[in-house]
Amino acid sequence: MSGLNASLRFGSSPPSKSRRPSRSSVSGPSGGAGAATLPEVAAWQAECERVKDKLVITASADLTSSEWRPQLERALASLSNLQELAPAAQAEIEAGGAELAASAAALASSEQAAHSQLAGLRSQHKAAVMAVTTLEGEQAARQEYVATLEQELELEERQQDMTEQGNTMSDKRPVQRLAAACTELRAELLQMEVRTGVLQAMLLRQATAKT
Image 1 (cartoon, rainbow, N blue to C red):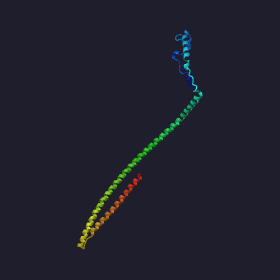
Image 2 (spheres, helix red, strand yellow; image 1 turned 30 degrees about the horizontal axis):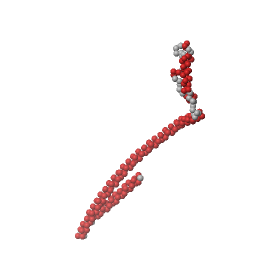
Image 3 (tube, helix red, strand yellow; image 1 turned 90 degrees about the vertical axis):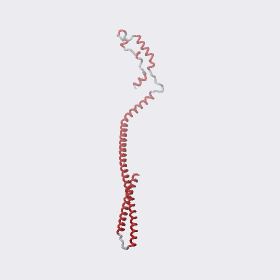
C-alpha cells in the first residue's frame, strides 16, 4: 500500500531542468566545475513552489479509505482463492477433455465396426436374394417341364386308350414309367418349394432383426 499512497501523493516527477542540486553543487564557486550558483538554487526553489500544487493529489470526498480498502482486500482475497483453485480446475478440465476424447474414439470405433457389420449383412442379404431368385427361376423351369410332361402323358394316355380300343393286349409299361417320372418331378418340386420357404423365412428374420 506504500506504493499506492506514494502514487496518490506524487502524481509526476518535476521537470528535469528543475532537478534539485546536490550539496556539492550548492557549495559555492569553490566546488569546482558544475557547481550551482545561488541564483540557480533560488530559481529551482521558485520552480518547486510553482508546481507543488500539481504534485499533490487530494482524494475526493466520496472515495474514502473505508470504502475502497475493503473492496481491494476482497478482490485480493478472491484473486488468491482463484489462484489456489486454478490448478485443480485445470486438472479437472484436462481430465474431462481426455474422457471426452476417449468417448469420441470409442464411438468412432463402434461406428466403424457397426458399418463393417452392416456391410457384411448387406452382402449376405444380396446373396440370399440372388439365391432365391435363382431357385425361383429353377422352380419355374421345372414346373414348365412338368407341364410339358403332363401334356405328353395325357397325349400318350389318349393314344393308349385308342390303341386299347382296337387291341385288348396293350403294354402299360411306358405309361407307368411316365407316371413314375411325374411322381419324381412332383417330389423334386415339393423339395424346391420347401427350400424356397426356408430362404424366405431367413430373409424375413434378417429384415425383422434390422428393424
